[in-house]
Length: 116
Image 1 (tube, rainbow, N blue to C red):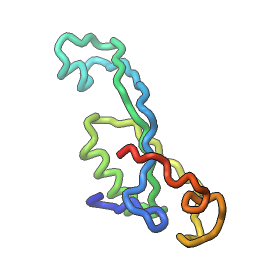
Image 2: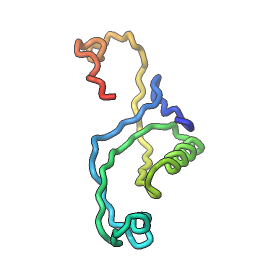
Image 3: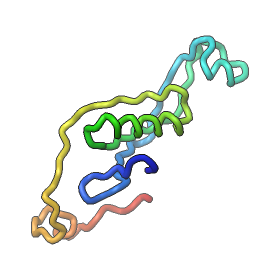
Image 4: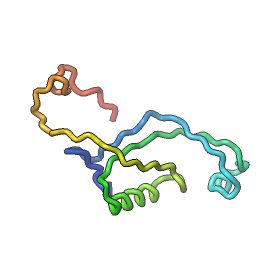
């Protein structure tokens, strides 16, 4: 957030976080794991919990560099797996009073239960 507000329409701090899954690796000799984990043998398999985080930023190389530098600085891995994709994304004609019956404020169901 210090380098980008992660805006999406009229919302900030917009991100999608997947359910917890697992990632595995087999660290080679000289890796951080074999250097800092006592007794870990090179080539052994390690598995840790992980989530997938998705954010959207404008197509601007200077912005991308700031965001990537921030992620790499604070991530607990020395080499996190990061995929960059250029995708099309939806953008709504924002009107919070629109009478579309499918919108949460009109469908009688309201918002889903908040988890955080």
